[in-house]
Image (cartoon, rainbow, N blue to C red; front, top):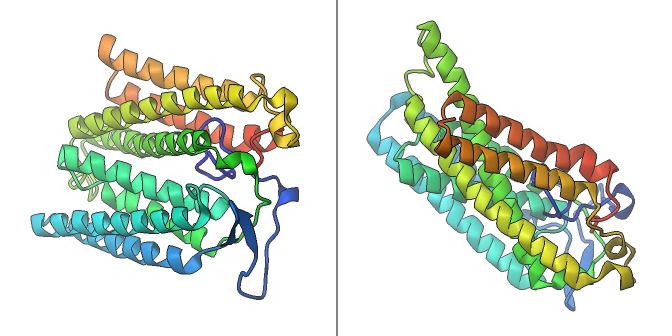
Length: 320
């Protein structure tokens, strides 16, 4: 993934150690870094603000739909989120043209890319299940993260190794996997809470408006399956890229530190095994519903573990 965010899914996302970052305060950000000969601003607040405003508008429409359960409001909510995601796609494309590579570094760009992919993943799940109620929980998360991306400011020294197309495929696959797993985790937790409320036979405001347990379980299964596919692709591409980099002859110390013994790789493989088991258990031994929901939550906890303690304290590579 990229630059250590709440998003770095599981494996080889470059993260910036504290010593390699610097922030500007008290004045507009004018720091620049050079990528492929281009002078690049460290922060693109104006470009991030427009998607943020559109996500806020989408959040309001989903709240209205959740409260009123009006089909017309639901269609408008979906359309507003689709418009926000479309504009965000345009922003990512413009940033890609400006930088010369997919904008996954520095940290604010990583967060914004994750928001974009999470929005796309949720829209796919919503359209394929024709259920919009979860938007009231997902879209506020998009707003918060995009807000963090907009106000953050970090500059990284350029790393030529990141110009490789392998990096773009590797990181984009893992970020999308992380977005899908985050979605599955939220859906899984919602399933468990709704299950308990239904079991107590004390239905409240949310229980009357949330999807049925069956729909939630279907959404969870699809999100996990999609995430697993992209996680697998990201890990495979990362392994091939590592062999191409030849760390033993690299002059960049961050590349030289790369190794198959990197703790992040082992934790990434652990998460892959858990999600593989979740898919197998759902299809072969009937582990759906609450068990599948708990597996989603546990799997995403492992991803967060890889992001936090492992990513910051136990690895010497992935720091770009």
